Length: 126
Image (cartoon, rainbow, N blue to C red; front, top):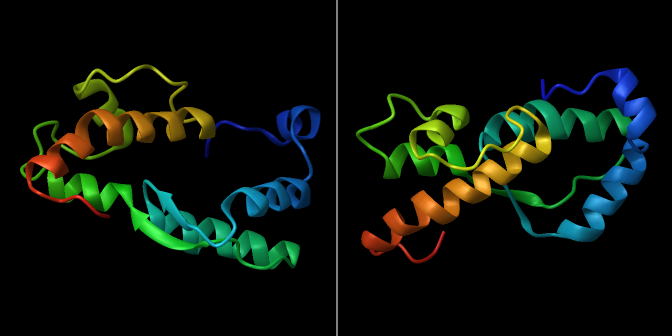
């Protein structure tokens, strides 16, 4: 999905248990924010944690995609796909469709587009 082949992960990655242990140390019980939280949480993370026999990390927080859909209604860019918004708002190129690039694009979108819109509407908490 994010362009990582099994060969790449075996060569350059870490064992999933190590990655999730580090993620758990970082996230603790904090809410997890994702651009498509329902999919990422229910279809990716929960099944992966179950497959590995590890406990859930963090708790579902909020969906940045749903926030974008609400704040950008009507949609000036045509849709709320992350790459579409990145191009429309001329956000930095961040290795599109890579995990790290997508995270950076969400951060840029939140800081440069969504937060200012939310503040204009008096929304100061998530």
